[in-house]
Image (tube, rainbow, N blue to C red; front, side, top):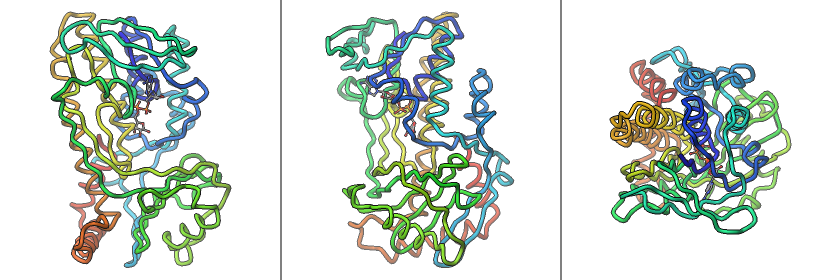
Length: 387
Ligand code: APR
């Protein structure tokens, strides 16, 4: 079994296959240091934690993660909090930076005898639709190489080789939501004990805890903005304004240690199986980060794929593999639908849409029903923490 990519999807899959006694190798383009330190998401849904616990992969997050169950919305009409942990299904997030989870998974995999070939870039997957697949690679020293396997799992993200190798006719549902965020990491403690969502006429601003020393902030920005156009003073002034710090209390400031622009797109591949090639994680579907679903979907899909591969390779039962794509797509579309709803709650319409006043009136009404309707709040909580 060859797994492309050592992100959450590839490493959960690798660990589960290793403990089922299935021989596998992970091919990863980057260095170990890069993989262990790349800051990405950080909100793990309750079901994600259950999956990791079920397989003994949750020691780190149990020790260092913190449960979280409140979000706060700030708008021109005031602010309100939702204790989503006490609504809907009563589920909480665990806040644990993704790079710490990836680091735990990598250590566990290698300590258990799992092989990872760092610096090895997959170039293409050949032969998968109709026969045994092979993966062409560029080794760390630049030489070409080839890996053969019974199955290949494409867990190499949205720009990986698995996506580039899909046969003609594969459906790719692509939608550009027309919204961009400047993603920031501040070396500063969280400013509020909740996820903060601020809707402002200048654009959205977001606050998400990561650790007691580091906080993620987001600022909606124009498409094509260069992060260099945002010096620290401008960032803090804009965050203060949009988060309405004068009214609701100051933000804890600290050096901005990372900044990058994220364009919100959805991109779903259908189906997720092409003979002996399976897609999981961002390779299967890209989702707008508005509801923090990406890493959670990756872990869920990796568990489904590991179980199906184990059934086939250990017990000769191919039913799970046959159903893998349809099962994942049910979860993927549900997450896409909720993320799309969050996007439209938090942002004005795309610039090209002339009906700004109409959209803004709908958005305000959406926010108001979330503030006042218990049924709406339960629905929100169930979808916000669930995958
Ligand atoms: N060959 C080998 N490795 C590759 C290649 C390639 N051609 N292309 C990419 N990779 C590696 C990347 O370096 C990365 O380590 O594949 C890995 C993919 O990891 P992620 O991008 O983290 O994707 P995934 O495991 O699917 O996790 C998805 O994490 O933060 C979120 O937005 C992200 O929500 C998404 C989730």
